[in-house]
Length: 418
Image (cartoon, rainbow, N blue to C red):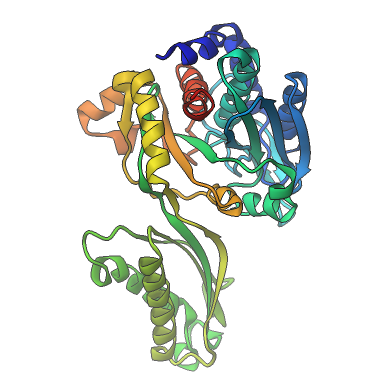
């Protein structure tokens, strides 16, 4: 650890207990995208108390805090705040029992199933350490708390609401995510890291009839079933084996009863790719399969394909990532790694792109190290280690929080401390 890192991180022990309490509080009170009012207030109140110049309500619930500390680079550190419509099954004493009204008017359980409570806590911890050790660094530190990452519209909402005019232009943007790796682990990756994601809603049309008279119908259920099967051949038969991609059908709806052939069927699917060429190829293949299967079935009406959500790929700047990786290696030693390509997706990259600056995004582990090691020994990581978005996903409090605070601080100091 450099003297500068040591000077800033020496304050961690004194705030550790408060950060743990904050994390448990955030976990117990999750909020859905663009409705993170309580979480945003926690962040803005804490930043104001620390002496940051705070602007809140950006893009609805987004918050930025600016701490100017003399001449030097400007570093922006980002954390996302929203939770998911998942019913928690962790059994923790601070489990969420929150329910909120969803877009369809029904009550939905809500849980921090992706770890954004860790991200908020870690960034506030870093912000506090930077304030307490201003003699150890020079420049401007910007803490950004983003809404609605899960919906893929929070970063753009902040940009559309004037983020680039309301925050100082950074030299670099930094972000991290807790992942199903052992707690204490930190992993960087230059270049492609997270996939692009496209969600599609496909509606195919048939001709309804009595279930006992299929000859009078064009059955959209059979049509949809053939499409679902054929979609599986895109990755297995149209892409090279070394080209990573995922096509998942997550939802299929048709009909209202067992003896009625309906007029239409709706298929919802998700696509993950890592470059524009593969993304275009897969989306074109989906459209081709849907059209031709509909035609082969004698559909009386052309199918409809609607893109309901889209996330950009997360491609880390090579030099920026190298700089952070070297800082992590010096601080974390054997716990610093090169992380694997991830199939998850993020909208964070839209923020540095709006400013026209480089960024890097890394992962930290949040799984109990003994549980992970035992699963690895048995070859059952996929079965025994809860992943993000699982109702059983809950990062262990420590050393996850210490790692998150330290990683963000060390990365920021790679610019502000130089």
